Image (cartoon, rainbow, N blue to C red):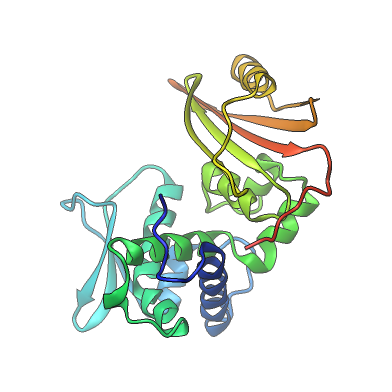
Length: 247
């Protein structure tokens, strides 16, 4: 279960993190839609250096009195982008606690990490543009990936949970369900037969699939590479009035 910051709801945490990120982007006059977290870190005054010896993907420490992000080499640029965005989140987490007028020492174990994760997602998928683009493009992950190039496909998929439309997102690796989340009040239900069919078609064809039936729309996108087959699913009601408050 996601830890809750005292009496602060997850929606409030997300909104505050979005506000903090918007302030950071404004502070450095960031005007591009896609956010390169490595360049952003430099503009914010954080040194970025590679450290092949470290075991973690990224870590924040001080170098000559200045905050610095140390990265382990990784062939996937999105992983490096996430690692730096996460460490910016660690650096900026104190601003979130300050905005909520809370002492970090009073937060439950792991809460600072949760805040850093929310800030990292808000950096790579800024609220000021992402939610409008996701709505305009019908939540199509490949189309959004062509805009938000520094974010991973899965981060974009999870970002769709922030829209007002009730949504389930699912991730399959080699045909096996690995992760499933929803933005409603209830736990995600078991897989629907229509979801399994959409995943199977995308898996076999290597092409995006949209199926409709039993009151839902299922969009499935393959993210395939040599030796690895992943499919991303988004399930939404056909009734576009089925909305909830966005974060």
